[in-house]
Image 1 (cartoon, rainbow, N blue to C red):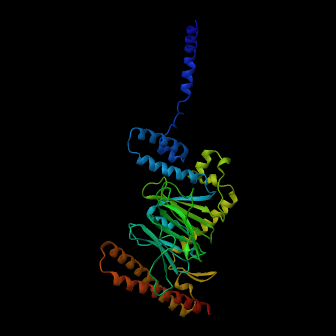
Image 2 (image 1 turned 120 degrees about the vertical axis):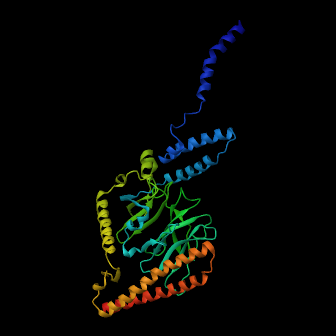
Length: 407
């Protein structure tokens, strides 16, 4: 009887044992692909999917390199999305990639950004300070990676020098420099281990005590993404910032976002937002969603339109010569002094020679790097002449102001 009772108890217990075993089953995986999760900035689901894929691949002893690379990106993205900066975007425009420099909207007071070499396959840009005394650009190093260089145009010997603290970062390709008017705050784009994907935007400051730039910081989301993000500029005169990205763009197009700069970095508090909201802010799903102060947006849009108008007018001008704080001359007729007009003609000739010689020098350097032809002496002569031209142009500008203003 005891044996029969034991068997009956065992039979009754079997369904509940099976139920317990069922409860140990793994939860269902997200109903999307890894690529869809990453595109939606749903990095937690992407992490779950990748871990599941890696477990299966390792069990079958199959290659995992693709999934491991994706997981490394997802881990970096998870850190960034937890500190998305609050940025008020006021406008955006999609332009052909070749025309992006025409739409940056920078005032003369903020310096100039131009193509380093027209038609250069490396697609490098050159930043020239407002006074024309310093240039920043990228050039290939011994490893074939682009590194940032600076050139002091006021010195007689002005060979480009690497940026200490930035150019010596190994395994990183750097490009698209922009210096704030303080002469110390530098924005640039880099592609390396610390990038989310493609080019990312970084910021650094020059330390006058050590004569080096501080360790660059990735500016994070929403400025950076899995695509190429670069050329961040801030015009302090109009208080407008902009940056360029090719996220969600065809191959030959880019999008320029314009925003209101902030003196302090404020981030969204993840616990105070729905996860969908945070993801939308991170990927700039809608610029209108960032408009917490519509009056500030309207005022900023007016400033942006003023800046665009200035650029349109400048395109029709012969040149732009800052005569005084409140007076800019755009043609020879804007000058009243006959002596000043004569000097302006000479100044224009020197500027034209400087522009042409800069192009020639860049071509000579490219030839030297690619084939090691004996262009070394020509390069040295061109550099010396450029240094002389920079000094002559600066002195000529002083003489023009004296003649015109009667100083």
